[in-house]
Image (cartoon, rainbow, N blue to C red):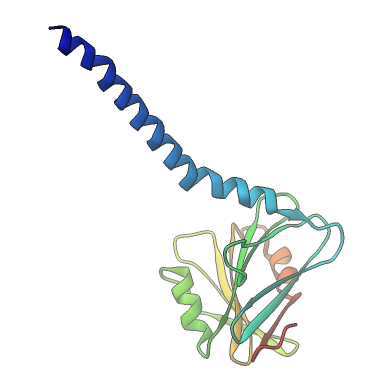
Length: 177
């Protein structure tokens, strides 16, 4: 009987230790990346250029005063910006592509409405609404490169999104904007 009693504290200790290890692992996987992202997010104090780049393509997004932004610390091809009121978030990724519509459809991950295409200087902006989601997805395209974007929510933010997209510059063939 005494052997059985002496094992109970050992079993309880092992269970508590395993629970603590699982909690630390969950924290490392889910909480730490969010803390890192929050610590690296900046707020623009005037017009600020954000650069994203990948092999053979680069993009530059200029945000105005009050927009917060973060270039993904784990992927230099991606950045996220948030409107000054904190409601609209726009995620950008620069890619090398000859078929921007297909790249946008893949990024949307679901059905999209027909595309609208608008020339903006030397680039063209193609955009559409994601079906069953308050999101606008699209790309700013120049040559064989595109800066893909998805904006959420967009209801009430059409003018802000249009202004933001007018300040996106895309280059290909390794030229940095």
